[in-house]
Amino acid sequence: MDERAYDERRLRDFRAGRTRGFSRRDLMRLTAAIGAGAALPVIPAAPATAAGPIVKPLPEDLFRLFGTNAEMRWSAMRDQGYYVPVDRFFVRNHTVTPEIDPATWALEISDLGRGRSTFFALDDLKRLPCETRPVAIECAGNGRSFYTTQQGQTVSGTAWQLGAIGVGRWKGVRLSTVLRRAGIGRDAVDVQPIGLDPNFVSGGVDLGPVRRPFPISKAFDDVLLAYELNGEPLPADHGFPLRVVVPGWIGIASIKWVGRIDVSPEPLFSPWNTQFYRLFGPDFPAEGRPFDRQVIKSAFELDPGTTFPAGTRTRLTGRSWSAAGPIRETTVSTDGGVTWRRARPYGSTPGNVWQRWEIDWTPTAGDHVLQARATDVRGNTQPETARFNTLGYLFDAVVRVPVTAA
Ligand SMILES: Nc1nc2c(c(=O)[nH]1)N[C@H]1C(S)=C(S)[C@@H](COP(=O)(O)O)O[C@H]1N2
Ligand SMILES: [Mo]
Image (cartoon, rainbow, N blue to C red; front, side):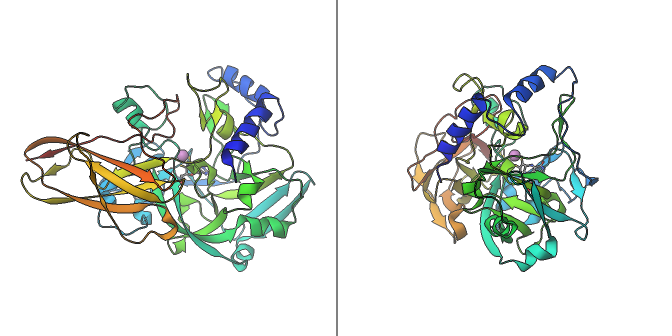
């Protein structure tokens, strides 16, 4: 499916006021209300109690913490396999991890065109044909801090380094299977999963539950409703009992703790595809450019500031990934970008979600800058500079990692 065309069409719908759920007028009212504390039309709150901001342990050696969010330290992936274990998988919560009773929980498929709902208990979903897929969940803002530290630009949002990505083995039922069972209308154009976590409040304005639409073509292509991660029941922080998994798309598409999925014959909008997760700035239209797909990145499996023994051969390891296709090659510079060498790819690549690589290096005493640059099979390559946008999304440039040898 052509996501660029979908984004362009939605931008035209939005400009023309052909919207449902969150209109351009809502956006203008919202923009006016922020700071003034006024309220928008309220979407019913989720009937969930909070289990805590994040439930699982977040040891200092595996995570960096930012309020309700925690990113993985890349040193935590050294000597790990292809998948990111749950104990180090990043967490991005708009509010808190809710506590949901799987016995009373049900998934509602709400066909807005027909005004009709169909419900599926967890056991119903588990009885449907299942599928297991390697998929990356990556926050659209992964790498955001480098807009500031490398490019001197001010952006808002969580100051992630590169650890807001996790690759997991997700098991569940295809969304298409469930939509067919629910017998949704043929005129459906968008679907919108809605989370059961508490409503997100921004600038004193209740924006309702976390939700973001995607096109029916994507829903019928490769979207999964997952109830297992890496062979275990979905952990509380990652969406128990059920989450949406949208391959190749930014993390916000993969709604956790899903309670309802709206299916609509008209385009849907929410604050998460109008106000947030849109590209704003001098290079973009005033109402922002919609986007859905992730970009290309590389990371070394080490923390910035690591000290190596001088004059001793060490093995640098890392991973590269692109939402556009498999990685063709990764080159590494250990001298601040003067010379580049090809890293050796290794290991199996289920689903081609990312590629592990390694390269030897014998550092001289002193400070050094490490860089890795990936190119995918479609010819996308990491640029020197990422395109500035005020919310700091889609940082794809080569990251400079300072290290020392002594
Ligand atoms: N219901 C709900 N779904 C959500 C979110 C949320 O706060 N609430 N955060 C989104 C964002 S911004 C990201 S990047 C991913 C993070 O998934 P993870 O916490 O399992 O790593 O979940 C997405 N799904
Ligand atoms: Mo995100």
